[in-house]
Image 1 (tube, rainbow, N blue to C red):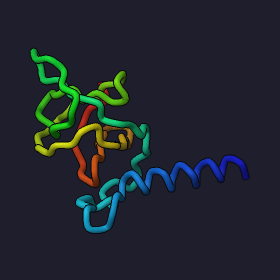
Image 2: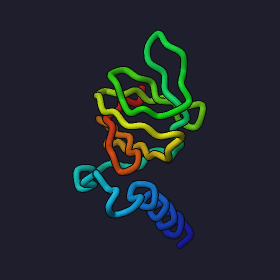
Image 3: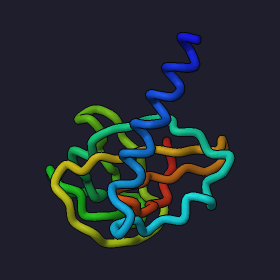
Image 4: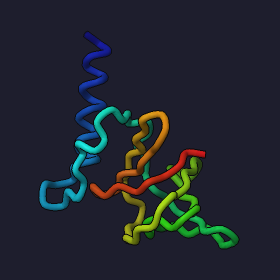
Length: 112
């Protein structure tokens, strides 16, 4: 019973993170059936190759390092521009591919 409650709380928290509001939802989450939420975090910055780290989120550019919770990194594998300051995010993975969901928008990433 205790583990079921933890799963329900985690599921509710993830739903609130992934579904900020119905009009703002840009993601069809059915594309991610079979994925697991591996991390819920704040995007605290990014760094492009050869440049200084920035403290905002400006979407993805190929090989851009995204900094999560001021200490973890994931790397973009595509391009999509958006701007947010320290947005909440979720990292989903199916074991072979991963995606970062920010404000209902998916960004393809690699974990290493």
